[in-house]
Length: 339
Image 1: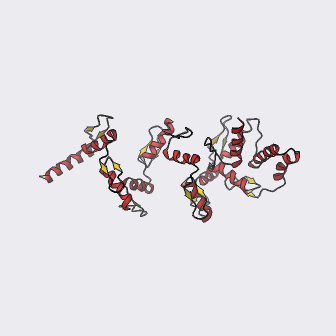
Image 2: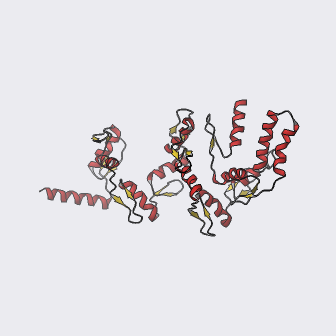
Image 3: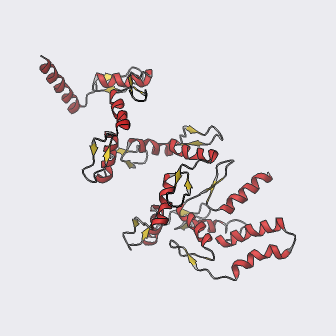
C-alpha cells in the first residue's frame, strides 16, 4: 500500500512538473507552490518559526535541508564535486552556481535592461542599480549601500579593521581582493592576458582598459561638449579646459599641493618656488603601460595608474570619501577643517 501511495504521489508530482501547475498558494503573499511541503516551509518565513536546531552550535533553521547543509560546516563534508575542475562544495546551490562558471549559463535576466546573470542573488543586486534601492545603512555616518558586502567593507573605515594580512610582508588590507592583487607584487603573477597582443596584466581592470587601445572604445564622455575619451584620466584633464583651471599633469598637481603646503609653512619666496623647479629639471623615466604618459617619479606613476584602475585606497575617516592619491585626501581634510 505504501509503495502504491508513493507511486501515485510521484506521478502527481511529475504531472505538475510537466504542466507547470502550482495548486498551493500562500495566503500571505500569494506565492504558489507545486507541493504542500514547499508551502509549509515557505510559511515559516512569514511566521519566523525555526523548528530545526543544530546539535553542535544550537543555530536554528526553518527547513531541515538548511540544517543539513549547515551541519557540513562542522563536519567539513563536501559531497558535491565539480566534474570539470574537481572543486568540492558543501551546498548544492554553491555547486550549481560554480558549474555555470564553466558552462557560461546565465539563467537569470534583468527585466529592465536584459543583462543576464548566473546567480539570482547577482540579479537582485543588479536590479538595485535601476531602482536606486539602498537597503543597507551605516549606523555611524548614515551612508547607504545597495549591497551588504559593500557596507561591511565601509564599516572598516570607522573601525580601522584590516582583517586580510599579507603572509609575505605583513601588510594589512580591508578587502580580500586588495590582498590578492597585492600578493601578485610578490609573485609576479599576471593572470590576465590580452587575446589580441598577448600582453599580461595583474588586474582584470588593467586588461579592460588596455583592450581599448585595440578596439578604439571611448567610454568616457564630457557632459559639457560631448567629446569622448579612452581613459578617465584624459577626461579629467579635458574637463579643466571648461573651467578656470589649466590642464595639469599629476606632477604639476602634486607641485601645487607642495607649493600650497610650503606657502603655509614658510615665509620665503624660495620655498614656494622650489617645488615647481623640482620636476622641470628632471627627465621622465616612468611610463604608464596603459596610456604611455610619462612621469618623473615612480610614486606619481603609481598614483596615475589608479585613474585607470579606479582604485581609491585613501579614505577620509570622517565622511568615508575615498581618493586615489594621498595628497588629494590631505587637501580634502584641509578643506573640511577650514569650513
